[in-house]
Length: 335
Image (tube, one colour):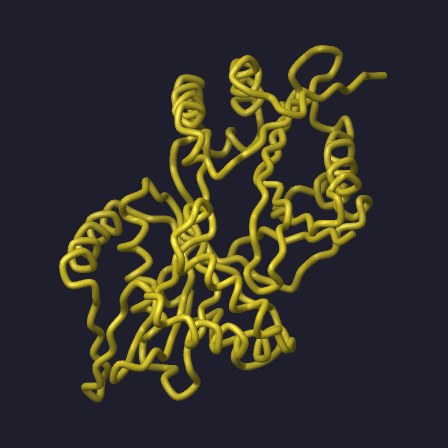
């Protein structure tokens, strides 16, 4: 029999215990970060809280021993104009695996989420966590996660792209029939086009008619600089003859335990008349340039796992640019 206690706002005073749990977790066993590396990265994240994506640390103890850590963050979904709670990471000391902690950790979060949506990525190989999600009334979402790990060559190419974006504010893309496309950071005057394509994406991939005023307010949060800019993300657009024909949103997330960032590519949409011309690659190139200023180790994107031909094409389009299919499952709990 064991007694679980939680420090809901674990902070600097708990640093040694927090790092200890992460170091002994199965996730770190895969990453093989040393105790010193974890300590250094976590200390830096605490010194610069504004860059840590407002991560909250909840430390769980068993009989006074640090046993598990849950990191959460509140995010904004511009499509439904609502916040949702994201379980960013769940670390369990390997000494306490098999004690049913997965369910002990997820059930209270699901119940105390104050009506917001709760999201969590779970590996298909983590049987205990999958079972805990099922017991806590999570539902699996029909999305496939794609991941691209960045190599040294990618980082070198990133620096060149940043110079191009900073100097010219635009990247040129030529198609096989000599059509010219230009990819750049979105501007305030692109608002109508981004709203239009976001709603078109909703109809095509989600079979939803997204409300115009809701989408517009969400897009404005990213276009207009504000206190949430670091977590809301930034839009990239591709133009043809000065008309926006494709969009993509880049949202960074910080990992406080290795000092790096993960960039999520979201809301990618290309006008039907301009598909098959390499524009997804142009947007990904621009995204690489955008995230170069951060120590980004990975790009991620979600593709809807539907039966429509568009979903199949999108999946293979990302794979052609070096993304691989991940075994993580996106779980959602709605209250």
